[in-house]
Amino acid sequence: QVQLVESGGGSVQPGGSLRLSCVASRSIASFDAMGWYRLAPGKQRELVARINADGKENYAGSLKGRFTISRDSAKNTVYLQMNDLNPEDTAAYYCNAEPRDLRYEMNYWGTGTLVIVSP
Image 1 (tube, rainbow, N blue to C red):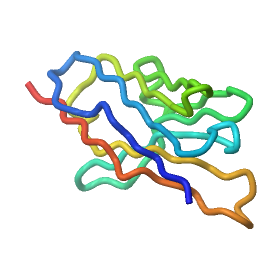
Image 2: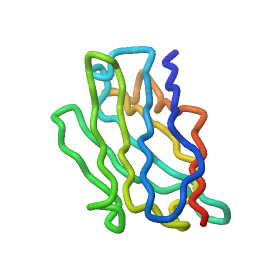
Image 3: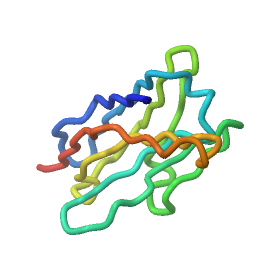
C-alpha cells in the first residue's frame, strides 16, 4: 500500500501564492505519472496538473501559466506551485499516483489539503 501525504494548503488572499507538496511512501519513479487534482464545492473533481515518468507536464487549460508541477525524485516528492491565486481556486487539492500497470495496482490518492483563497 502506498501512502501519499499532502501539505502546504492554507488560506491566502487573491493574488497570493502557495506551494503544495506530496510525499510518497514509495519511489515516485515507480509510477507512470504523478498528478494533482482538486475538488471544489458543488463541482466535480478535476485534473490540475500531471507529470509523467518522462517528465512531460500537462495542465488544465485554464491553469497553465499560473500553476507549475515539479518533482524531486530523491525526496519522493511532487510539488504544485500555485501563483496569482483567485477565489475560484478554492478547493481541496489531492495528490494522485498512477501505477504503471492497473492490472496489479489501483490509483493512489492522498487525503487532500485545503486551499482557501479569500480577501
